[in-house]
Image: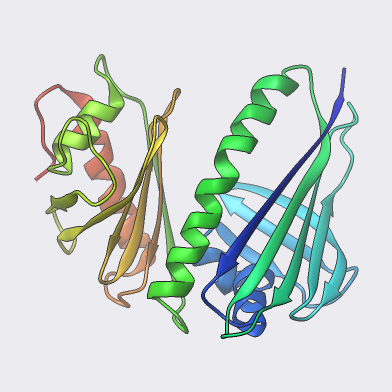
Length: 251
């Protein structure tokens, strides 16, 4: 049985409306802070597509007003489920912008768990958007995705150990790891909760999602260095190794 839902979030961003539009309504912009690989046809009635780990989902663009409003809606599944997103942009004095996000639609039988996950996720994603606009303006991030199962150990503890973070990792802590075949990661923890870490370095935003089920990584690299496919393969090896056995550090 389906259940309607709506989540509304608002954030002040350190960018002008045109910069925010580029971040939320173009494929390269979305790839720089959200999830997966993205394509956006720049017109109302066009297609917005996201591919995460080989799973592609498409939506129709229902509003396309540059620097003002962008909205999409997925098709309705056989069971009545669908997702709709609306982004409303309002410029403020001093070069900042208020972004309001409305995520609505119909959820399935496990709607309460799904709703809770979505409600917890949006503050984090908007935090990442702010990090992107504040620290990597005008640059395009390359998305890197990896997934692995934790083998008989708490995923959070294993990741903290591998990233040289304290057990009770908190925002502001420093992280360091040297994955084989990849540039070292050396940066600051900008987000830490029961489900995920995010680390900002001089050339990337690195997210490690460890909140139940498989561990996921959603990274955004701004270095122009290792090719995306090679970086993804390297991080996949690192994550699998870290979660395979207690005590392994991944260094």
